[in-house]
Length: 289
Ligand code: PAF
Image (cartoon, rainbow, N blue to C red; front, side, top):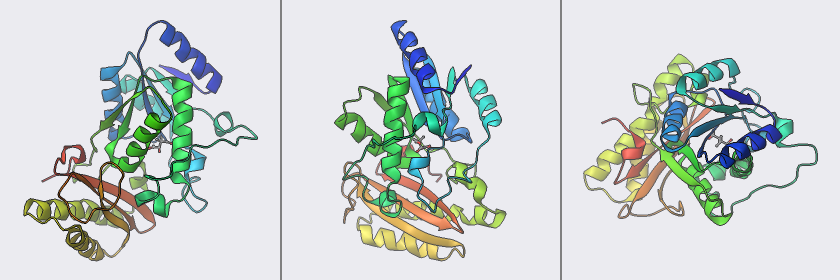
């Protein structure tokens, strides 16, 4: 397994591979890898000859009061997991390599990025799309795998690929959950044991939505109210948003008569967690029964 830290080396390496006819698969990450990331590697492996996993805690996607400096990092552990998962190249650039002095170009999306996480994290998706566009140019992937857990991010990247003419296949991977159903996230490490138990409230809220839907409820307001009522029972929880949106433009819908995304962001103590469910086909959500 190769470790590449310079942007120039990354581009040179991948250009040589492409000249040799290799198909490149990219898994972009911020490191502190877990089973969710490794499931993305597995999917990339199935569709590419060479799998590149990038590890970069991207400063431009964190707000001034967010957790950039304390975001968990452990390169040695990540390296071992990547080796075991069969990653071919780990690309781990420095912030200076990605944003040299005088850096001034950003990718901004002006519709899908405004609601859900974009509403409470202004500038977040500008940072995400910018770094992902750069990673696309540096690794020249044929296929890129993103997790459904960050459903809005994945939808925005599809939109960017379409609007900026990146000829890349984007694969969506199902949410990977802990044995008790908590969606895996590097940020779960912030939770105290009590908060870890209370974090199950997110998936319980989604289960409420699914149960009501299966019973025939189609009114988004009633579904959101039932989810909210459940979360309000949790001492350490504070709702950032609960929303039912369409899958294309991510706009709130009043009725669940067409396919929808039920998404929520909830603070458990100081930790902001997200989770989601698609309906009627909930297969990407992997929500336990
Ligand atoms: O989902 C993530 O880990 C990040 O947002 C990404 C896509 C690697 C961009 O920094």
